[in-house]
Amino acid sequence: MATASFVGEKRAVVLLSGGLDSTTTLAIAKAQGYQVHPLTFRYGQRHEVEVAAAQRIAAHFGVASHIIMPIDLRVFGGSALTGDAPVPKDRSTDDMGHGIPITYVPARNTIFLSFALALAEVLDTGHIFLGVNVLDYSGYPDCRPEYIAAFERMANLATRAGVEGRQKLTIHTPLIQLTKAQIIARGRDLGVDYGLTTSCYDPGPVGVACGRCDACLLRLKGFAEAGMVDPIRYAAT
Image (cartoon, rainbow, N blue to C red; front, side, top):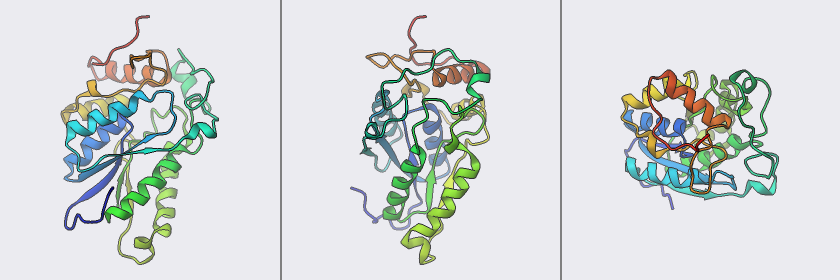
């Protein structure tokens, strides 16, 4: 369990899914000198293989602590990622840019950030890193800059540290204005091993990416535009 005994250290909570964006964000936080404390959620997602990926990534980076929080969002449902609805496949980038897809998990980032806020307060830090992106965000409303700014304002009203004026919380979103190709290039420059990551919403039984869901298509497009080969395995098409 985390404790507030890290006096004098520059700490940050990093939301780590095991995907490309959150891994790059963790690398950026480390490069900026933070002692990182990743927080990962096992929330009943059909792509639970990402939790194992997050564990690999945390071990690779030698993080200060890594909490895996179990919360079962299948109880609510409302998403293809937490229910039985099929994951959309083979959509064009134009289609991805219109409307909110069925892979949206209701209020997921609000739930995750609330846990991160609690952990940050226990760790006595005002820094949370989140790998959201507004350019390749697949229509998710909780990846927008205005949402992040609103949550940050709320968070500074909601904690003892904020009310007492001891600490102002900042939500760092270093990828928010980057394309997927730019994110991958940034990670490459930081030495990120993207072979440790997974992005697929509908992986096979042993975690092989489908290559056809929105997350896979955006990832493959990003690697192609960055002039790199994606190191993970994809199902044969």
